[in-house]
Amino acid sequence: MGTRISGVGMYAPPRVMSNKDLEKLVETSDEWIRERTGIEERRVAKQGTPTSDLAAEAARCALEDAGIAPDAVDIIVVATFTPDMLFPSTACFVQSKIRAKNAFAFDISAACTGFVYALSIADALIRAGRGKTALVIGAEIVTSILDYTDRNTCILFGDGAGAVVLTECPEGEGLLSCHTYSDGDLWGYLHGPGGGTAAAGTPDGEEAPKRVITMSGNEVFKHAVTRMGEVSLEALAVNGFTKDDVDLFIPHQANLRIIKSVGKRIGIPDERVFINLAQYGNTSAASIPIALAEARAQGRCKKGDLVLMAAFGGGLTWGSALVRM
Ligand SMILES: CC(C)(COP(=O)(O)OP(=O)(O)OC[C@H]1O[C@@H](n2cnc3c(N)ncnc32)[C@H](O)[C@@H]1OP(=O)(O)O)[C@@H](O)C(=O)NCCC(=O)NCCS
Image 1 (cartoon, protein in one colour):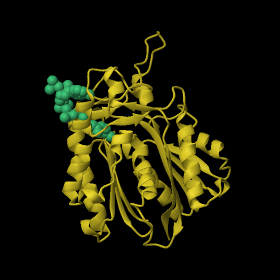
Image 2: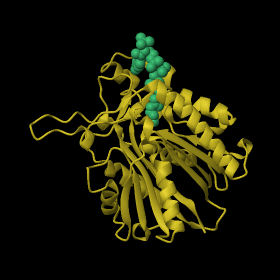
Image 3: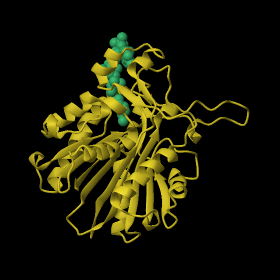
Image 4: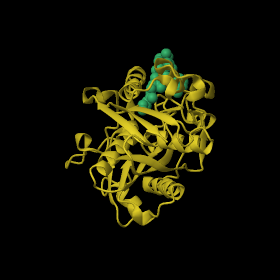
């Protein structure tokens, strides 16, 4: 017994923030952002919007696509580093909002690799008999933790949510493998120090630092290219495929130059790489499921296609998933 993706869905808030809009906030230019990242615009949620609102919208779309009722969902996993609250989990809010009363729900934290981690966990739970149907969601309001005085980071990210419905299928079909890795020694390259116990306020009145993303862009760049390339090739080798068998490569959408370099390392030509980074920026855990939903809607990911997904992010974390759609 294995698992397959039976439905996909996405949601992005309607407000568009262009590179030109960012020019008014920090010392940057539309030209620099396009050339160095490939990003043209990103979506921004209204201030105060809970991440679960976006996640629930994406989940509803995925359930409708799968033709599955909310009360048939057994497991809800939300990957996010921008949860509604410290607790309860964002997944519990999603459960309530979509009326999935028979599910158990929890969040996982693996930054931009979160969706691949969540897929791997949901797959393992179904294989272990803990449920038959899972909602796997990547949802982020990254703009809520951006420092709009730091031009290295604030130009990169956007908000959104993507979801898939995972159901049982015969072994050897559907989700063929997940590979997930971490290197906690490298946490300092990409992190959000505020909001946790390591950077808390004190009883004497010392204020906690702000919750913002801090990043060493060049280090993250190098790591992303190497690790996404490695973990993608591993997925193909373990399953006995070559680069030529891949119908569509869906990489985490962080930087166009990273995506192109990884594509080159694996040997997959541009026309078989899905890129929607220009419109959304980096939506962290939401980027792969949003891309998957758009690829499906555009007819670029059909039933029977072999789809390779690869992600990397803070932790540092990285991973791949190989799926027969
Ligand atoms: C952040 C990133 C776009 C920077 O691009 P880069 O080509 O490496 O640029 P550098 O950091 O070498 O900076 C080059 C110059 O541009 C400047 N610069 C940085 N951000 C800028 C911006 N938004 N606008 C204009 N100039 C900028 C730098 O200050 C530097 O100026 P200097 O040479 O005078 O010091 C790139 O490193 C990157 O995308 N890294 C990966 C980040 C990522 O994906 N994070 C999420 C992981 S999930």
